[in-house]
Length: 158
Image 1: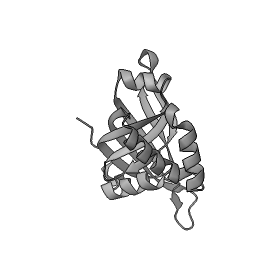
Image 2 (image 1 turned 120 degrees about the horizontal axis):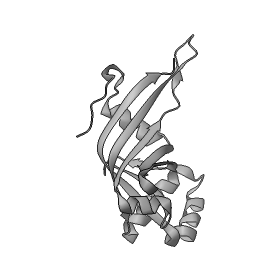
Image 3 (image 1 turned 180 degrees about the vertical axis):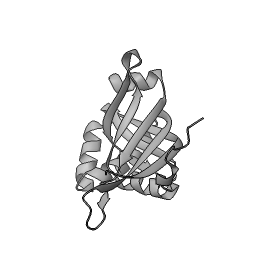
């Protein structure tokens, strides 16, 4: 169902993909929006290797929530900061593309657990994360992307 990568020599292993998903903080979440137009937006996320899911949060209402309710097929892309080989100007960047299905998580205990893990990735302290969760949990929607296909590629910007 999913295409194989055309430039197979640039493919990276599943382990390399998981490393990028685990270490990076932001990515582009893409869904089908209003009128059938693609809708891509930056999100903060975390990858749960055991669940094989990407978790993120957002509002309970709005363009993203409406689009998800209309079609659960999504694409998520992230990439690392890259590296330069000695004596070269160009960066070498590893990107990861995920195709999957997104769903809204509403079980209170799961929402709290996953929001804590997500907040720990971004907030400078657990205390600040807990305060934000206490303040906003009733307004937050937790989303999970169930990964169906994942591929990664190392590219030179040259």
